[in-house]
Image (cartoon, rainbow, N blue to C red):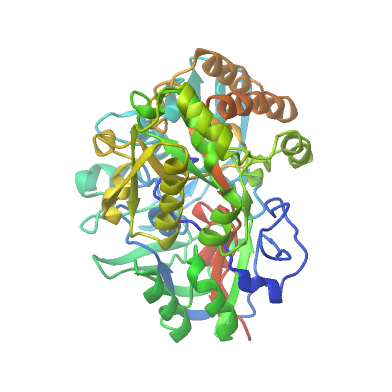
Amino acid sequence: MRTPRFLAFVACTAALAATATACSGATAPRNAVGTTGYKVEPTSPAASGPLPSLTWSLYAEPYTLDYALAYDYPPNTVLANVCEQLFRVTPDLKIEPGLATKYTQPDPRTLVYTLRPGVKFHDGTVMTAEDVVASLKRHTDPATGSPWGSAFKNVASIEKTGPLEVTIKLSKPDVLLHELMAASPGTVESAATLRKEGKDYGTPNGKVNCSGPYAVQKWAQGDSITLKKHDGYWDTKLAPKTAEVKFTFVEDAAARSNAFLSGTADGGYMVPSSSIADLRSSKRGTVLFGPNTGAANLAVLNLKGTLGDVRVRRALSMALDRKNIVKAAAGGVGEPAKAPTARGAWALAPEKTAKIYGALPEPAFDVKGARKLVEEAGAKGKKITMVTSSLAPEISVVAIAVQAAGRSIGLDVELKPVAPEAYSSIFVDPKARTGLDLVITNGYDNTPDPLEFYQYLRTDDFGNYGNWSNPEYDAAFDRANAEPDVAARTELTAELQKIALRELPVIPVYEAPYSVFLGKRITGAPTGIAQLYYPWAATIGAATP
């Protein structure tokens, strides 16, 4: 999911300055504000031995374990170890075969997948082409309500064309659909289980029966989810080193930090930025930083209100003091975002990233010029309602900064606090956006292709929260999505980026690395955002033999 879904900003603190090393990795910022830098690596040191169990902290309870509805960090963090896709995103942001051993494209509108033989679901049954067809088709059924339905917009048919072969026919070329076979759209579940469980599938009362290295053992609603090792797992390279993984849900940032410090939780992704300094100095574990495809943005939810005038959107962007936002919200580690997509999202063609980003101007900070734009637009004194939440301290920090920026140029920015679950609803339920103009989002890619992010700004796309529509943009997207050559497609995506920066349906704020805390007794975890689809828990084991 690119998608600016449920927000959970992750950043380092200024405490890094004392122990920082040189920046490296695709997502290492150019100029970390207030620190000398840090290191970005895709994995932690390899495990030395097995473990009977470990406890992993999530910042919220998953709202589902239904792969077709999983559209946020908590459910995908769990499901990455339970369910698998036709292809797989690796920790270093590459795409490799998964449940499909290969694919061919006999013509631009046909995708043929050869399935891996002998793959067993958790109940011992063997994966078939019928399972793949049923799993993919669920996204296209309006009754499922899958947020991934728009990814299949160009699909004419999905059919079994051999004992271990599935063919997708397209109405027009669609490069992204294939790439998304490495994310939720490409997940495979037992067709028999889907039929049997019905509406209970993916809930605490229903079963999930996929093929990943772990199976769901128990979902104690409001408390924890426990996974057990799948002994029949097909990929011997990723045979789990830990027999049992227990996920606990801790929404409060301070309580989550205390769980790490006390050893109640062995680890967790997306460490609260307010806790990183204490965790680094505690000697109870290690905070590591990995590749990230995400950037913090402001998504415009209402283009019929004050922000409907592009001059007002530009003015608000110009009024943001991004360097101070990075200091306050990210502990000084990160950088002002030059575009809605983070540089890490361009990992499919890393050799072009420096050139593309180098050509972009630094985001302007010009309060006087912004005030003039507001006056030209006749928007002085007009109201903008921005949603905020107690979900994470960073949300409030950024919201207050945006309110101050708006007021400094003559806009009346009102903050509307909502509960964490209501904040999540904004990204999946259009009705939840009623009366709101602006929301803080974490726009990220599930794959290493930046075109994925920009598909969500097409007319009528599910992720186009403000219903922005631009014919020039739509036509440019279609050209890019029909280009099979990675280098050429990257250049076409850069053109989309220019239009997005000119029109600002989303306003870039800042980008920062992914983070993970590992307690002293464990190691082996991938460190970056690929953990949303890579079976990360399988590689975790004992730090010492």
